[in-house]
Length: 247
Ligand code: WAQ
Ligand code: MG
Image (cartoon, rainbow, N blue to C red; front, side, top):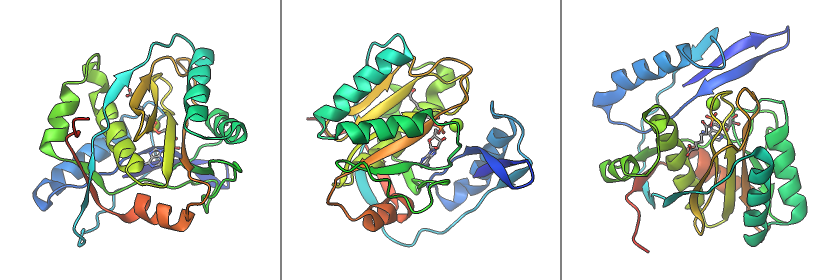
C-alpha cells in the first residue's frame, strides 16, 4: 500500500506505505487494514491510496528473525554516538557514516531506503528521491509469536515493531548487506533501530525528538557488492521470516 498527498504544483509527498506476503484467503482483510491505516496516519490525510497485489510464483527463501535488544539512550545526540560507534565497528567508513546521517537528517521525503557503499560512501540507489523499497517479506507464525515475547514493547507499537524487525531480518540476511539504520518518519514515533546479522535488531529509544517529521532508512552495502543484485533481492525476492536460530 502507498498513500500520498499532492504538494505544490509539481508532485506529491509520501504519507505511508506497507507491504506483506499473505495467502489468498487473507487478501481482502489485509487490503482493508492497509486502507484503514492510510486514512488514520499521523502524517495526515492522503488524497491518493494505491493498493497493489501481485501473485508470488517463486518459492520464497527463508531468513531468520533477528534477535531484538534495546539499548539505553536518552537523547538524539547520544543515539548518534551509539550508531556511529556500531557502524565503525562493522567496518563502515567515517565518510559513509556521515553520509548516512545526512540522509536521515534531511527534510526530503523518501519512500524507500538509501543504499550506501561501506567504504567510498557512494549512494547507489537508482532513484535518489524515491530510494529502494524493501518488499515481499512476511512472518511465519513462530516468528510472530517470538515478536510478541520481546520485552518492553507497548501494545500501540506492536505492528510497527513487527514490520520493522521483519524488514530488517530480510535485509540483514543478504550477504552483501553490512548494516541498516532506521528512523521513523512518524512525528510521534521516537524509537529507531540499527540492525545487522551480527548485531541483531537493536532498538534505540529517543533517536529523535517527538514532533520531528524527519526520518529515513539507510542500508550499507559491502564496497565490492553488485548493487543491482542487492536491489533485486530487496525489492523482488519473496522471503519468509522464521523463528530465530539459537546462537
Ligand atoms: N523499504 C525501504 N525503506 C522504507 C520502507 C521499505 N519497505 N518503508 C519505509 N522506508 C523508509 C522511508 O524512507 C521512510 O521515510 C523511513 O524508512 C521510515 O519509515 O523497534 O515506522 O515506516 O520500535 O516511518 C522502527 C521501529 C519503525 C523501531 C520504523 O519507519 C522499534 C518506521 P517508517
Ligand atoms: Mg512512517
